Amino acid sequence: MTDTTPTPHAVHPLDDALQLQAQPQAPGRYTGRSTPAYWNMVGPFGGVTAATLVAAVLRHPEALGEPLSLTVNYAAAIGEGEFTVQAVPVRTNRSTQHWTVSVLQAPAGGGEPLVTTTATLVTAVRRETWSAADTPLPAVPGPQQCERIGAMFPVQWLQRYEMRPVSGTLPGQWDGSEADSLSQLWLRDAPARPLDFPALAAMADVFFPRVWLRRARQVPAGTVSITVYFHAGAELLARTGAGYVLGQARAQEFRNGFFDQTAQLWSEAGALLATSHQIVYYKE
Image 1: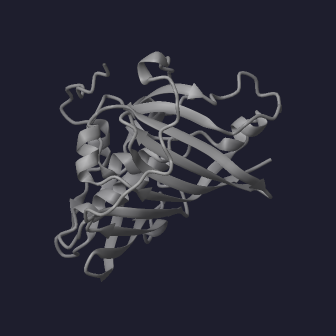
Image 2 (image 1 turned 30 degrees about the horizontal axis):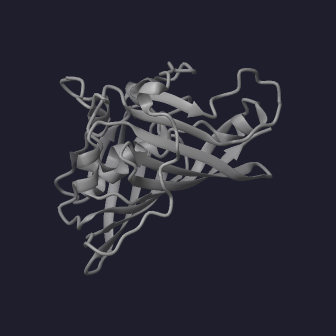
Image 3 (image 1 turned 90 degrees about the vertical axis):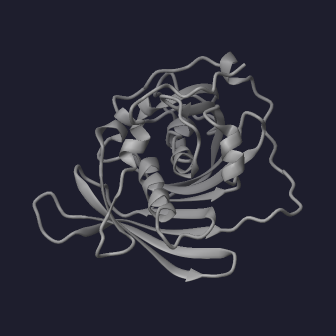
C-alpha cells in the first residue's frame, strides 16, 4: 500500500515559494519572491511560476469557483528577489470567470518593473453532470514497483519531486540516436504534500524537453507557452491526497526550432486530474 502521509515540515518548500503578500492599496496585486528551492538553470522552474499565478487568483477576494484552464506565456526569466503578481478578473459570468494575470519585476540594475510572464486563467463553478473518461490510466507498474531516481542535473527544483520513471528516461548516451519521445513516470512532491491546484499546475511542467529524448542531444530548450486543463475539482484532489500521480508526456511535431508536447496526469486510482499542452523552443 502506498504511504500517502505527508512528511512533517514547518513550511513545505512549495508553500514557502507560493507566499504572496497582498498590497492593500491595490486589490489583486501581490508581492512574491523567488526561492532557491525551485531554482532552475537561469530562473525559477516554470511550473512553480504557473503555481504562483494559480495561487494569486485563488486568494483574490472576488474569485469564483475553481481553476478550469490556465495558459502561461514565459516572456523572460524571473530573477532572484521580489516580483509583483497582478490578477485581474476581466469578466464574471454565472458559472465561469475570466482572468488576466501577469508577473512584473524590476531589472537587477534598477529601473521600472518589466513584464516577465503573462497568463490567462478561467475558473468555473462545477456542477454534477454526466461524465466519462476517454483517456484511461495506462497499464503500468505501480509506483512502489518503480525505482526512485535522484536529481539528474544540478538544479534545485528537481529535488522538490520524488520521481519514479516507468519508461522514457533520459538517454544513457548523448549520441544523437533517435528514439520515441514518450515518457511515463510516477511522481509526487518531496516531501509529500496533499495535492491542490497550484501543485497540480506545477506538475504539468515537470517533464524534460522531449527533444532530448527524441534525438539524444542535450540542446538548449525552454517552454514558451503552456496551457493546463484542470479536470479534477477540489473533492477529487482531496481524495488524491499526498499519493502518487502518473505523468505521461510526448511530442507531436519538431519543426524549425519549436516543438509541442502533450501531457496527462492521473491519480493512482485512475482519475484523470489534468492535461496540458505546451510549445517549446529548442536550439541546434
